[in-house]
Image 1 (tube, rainbow, N blue to C red):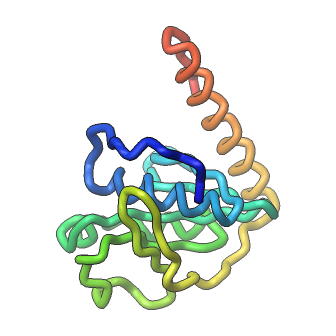
Image 2: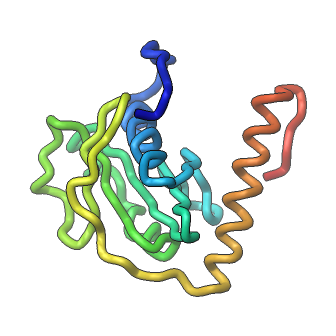
Amino acid sequence: MIGLMDETLPERAPGQLLARGVCRHLLTHDFVCVEEFVPVPGLRVDVMALGPKGEFWVIECKSSRADYLGDAKWQGYLDWCDRYFWAVNADFPIEILPEGTGLVLADPWDAEILRIGPESRLAGARRKSLTLRFARVAASRLQAARDPGVTSGV
């Protein structure tokens, strides 16, 4: 149990609702998450998760077959994580997802990891730059939430 009691959901797209459940679940594994994270210009991952040992997981949330088939960039995300996952809802046709990737079953409140993706460790220099970017983006979003009139270049 995460300790969140509010069951009302703000207006969000279906993929964002899946991301919410994924992030809540990953907290139980001691991972912290940033949604809609841009590791480099031109790539935006749905969920970037940082684990307790410095490992990075990318989780792409797909709410439908059409949403999945329209994603031509996902293989570019593999260079920016130690493990890669798809997060889908219970109605998603999981047989269309590529083998050799992780799989998470999610809803807006929680998730379950069904399959762990294979590990492909990031190089040290890339891990360092990604960790710094992750920290700066997270801190910038926290500051913006606490003081909405302040903008950041991150």
